[in-house]
Image (cartoon, rainbow, N blue to C red; front, side, top):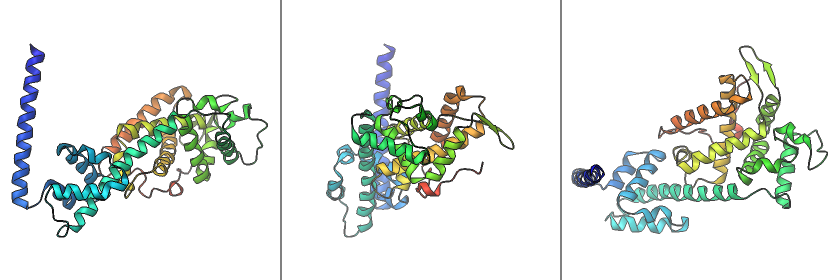
Length: 315
């Protein structure tokens, strides 16, 4: 009986809120002469604030299908929506451009989630020449002066893998982990090498703290998992909508990974863990901090969005 009453109460609250919302919208349109979409675009600069509100408005207007259109059909979709809302494109030329940019961000985010998920689900295959080539490139980037004695070798531990065959460490994140590590090593090599060097030190003291090492590659795969969870949960929308002018791409995701790697390195030093057994505690705390930052609709984790522009603190 209590459950029934709760459902009925929620139903009437929903109806009340919906009617009230529609009534407020009607009054706002009569008072301003603009519909909801116009008010959002004219009152919010391009970025997460505008795009998140437009996405929610599409849902409330029962226009969810617009959120999953193919990028090639975004322009026509916006034309159809403006016709539906009786907005004259000739007297509102900027509105169509703004709506297109925001809708491209929305559909691009969905496409990025699908692309990242595909990489995550693809297992590392030692029989695949492309996979093996990427792995060998990773070694050469991180150990340019040290030849690898064999495909199966304890040397892999030198760059932070757990055993003599790295493929076993990619099980959780599939090829996504390898793609991210290689991107970091290739596009922000100096920082990657510095982090690797620090990670190999079991324990060394700086001026005000002791630094405890960690497994570089394993941490990279773990931070890939963190970046993936931020992406699929939608938390990264704030960041990506603020830094990608139109469609977020895999490149944006990989650059975000570079940023998270460097920030985690800083955070690890700040936390000053007693040993590697505290990794999960530090990672969870770091995750919560990033989530708090992303709640700010104006947040951009790396505003210039160039891995080369991101630098470690001077250790």
